[in-house]
Length: 456
Image (cartoon, rainbow, N blue to C red; front, side, top):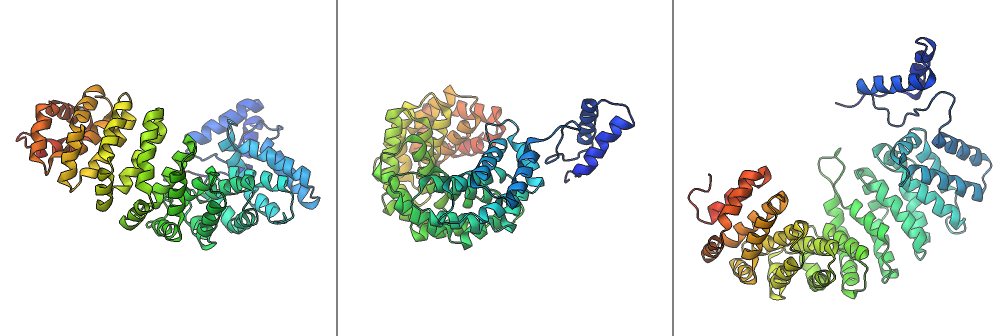
């Protein structure tokens, strides 16, 4: 059931009644109103809840903008945008409530109006950066992104990005706006795609081959994530195919293949490539461009460097690419199984890495008994036994281990004997009894191991 709403005027009247009619002091009157309305299920987001007579910094900032609309001054506008950004973004502890208050009081419309008046080619760069940063911090829910859409925000931002393709700082700020605006809003995603943001992304990637713009990757991932619960069928998978078709997947593979990326950049590139790899054709094209080689090399490097974050995202990407049967054979043929087992030995103290490794092995063995044979030869059976024994409380890893075991043995009777002789049965049964999310996977694993009492 949707939360009840209240106007700012009604809230202030309630506080006033507490003071005038019940004799409460201002602080007590405010707290009583907040508590009473909260208990009644009223949504107070965006409501200014301060003691009567006090001012709110967000409202003060917006009042300043309104004055500057009639008497514009670039330096003063930049200062005001910076103040708004600081109020509505981390690490301000009140960032979320401040952004809600700003949205409710017209901040998005005001910011878009002011941004539209900044000359695209000749305007103040300092003002532009301040405005974009403030706008990105305001866009936090469908109310704010809806206002952004109605005010032609996508057109304004695309214009600034197109005119500043070589300015990394402007691009970073601009794509932060894109990422914020499209998160959770299918309509805004569609607007940016209609404005050919995909072609702009490709052009910028080509211009800045040796420079990773993190917010650009964030924007691509946000564009391709189906996160608007108001729509039944998202269009993002079609967008992903379009991104791949025009060459963005290839550009990302090139950046991975070139090497020299820092950890955070490598994580961004891998996670972005993963959201583009939505079908078999794209997965195969990524492999053809050298994507598997680049990922396997990064897996080796992550193990040598002890970099868990990179290890996990590389395994996650490899698992996605292994969805193509052709890619499965290529990964195994290039020593992928051995590399994964080596990686598991390096991170044998971290179940979050081990579960990703198990996921890859599980996918590699799906429908391909020869890969299951190779996996057990490489040490996948020992990995399952040791990990399940060592981390009994890691429920997701236990589940992934059961799924991997099933794919290791379902078409390979010889692997059943090996795993049973290693004592795997008792660990699977323990996982089944201990973790509810493991029950089905564990039952399937016991059945495919050929155990008659697999339901027990």
